Image (cartoon, rainbow, N blue to C red):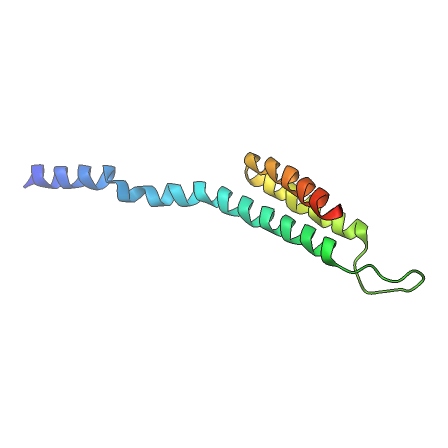
Length: 101
């Protein structure tokens, strides 16, 4: 009976089902990175689509400096989450180049 209990305890200790606690922590970096990259791309598209106010009028539209600051913040947070998010900077630049021509 003691041997059966020991074998069950060893099986319980090394069973792969216990990897969930570790993989959820590791997977969080990828989820955060994806979230911030998608926010950056969405914000970039929003800034490109937003109509410019007529000259000499005040509008409630955010300034281009605000667009740039939030875009930079999202890209910075994505890079802090996972280093592979640096490629999102290239995507943002390509998106800007494709829509400005």
